[in-house]
Image (cartoon, rainbow, N blue to C red; front, side, top):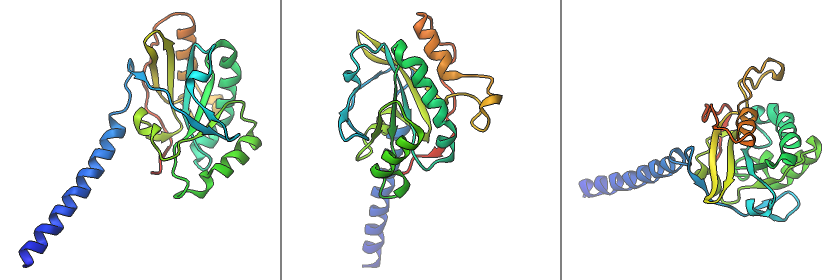
Length: 206
């Protein structure tokens, strides 16, 4: 009887382990540069659903997974606003998505997203990944984590993945502006030179 109970417990542990590994693998195996990103429909802070296809005149998108509570995300908020102001009129709007589970982090609740967006003067959609279904598709692991997409005949192709720039602590000390460089290259019809960097930030809370 003890052997049966032991085997039963072992089997349950095995299933839970397999589920955890599978869930982690889904994140690790998200989009790579060159992949076509599927569209989504997520709730914006104004209560309306937003999809990439809503931006008819867009040439591409700067998709940023970010949130309220993370100090890294907070450090980049002004730079994200600046990216939108600079590139939205050129066809590359910012689309911000909060991937965190609000039941785990009250600071990242929908209501607090609305407050934060107003305080910081967000000029872009700030969407809630309800059910946390979108960030695993992308493979996002941090806040902030950026995906630059280019609209093409075959869909929204991933052209850059990673950090916004090379210094989250001090904007004045930035030497590499990865997202700006990527978008500038695409606007000129050139290949993105740095296609992927390591995103630095807080881990996404599932």
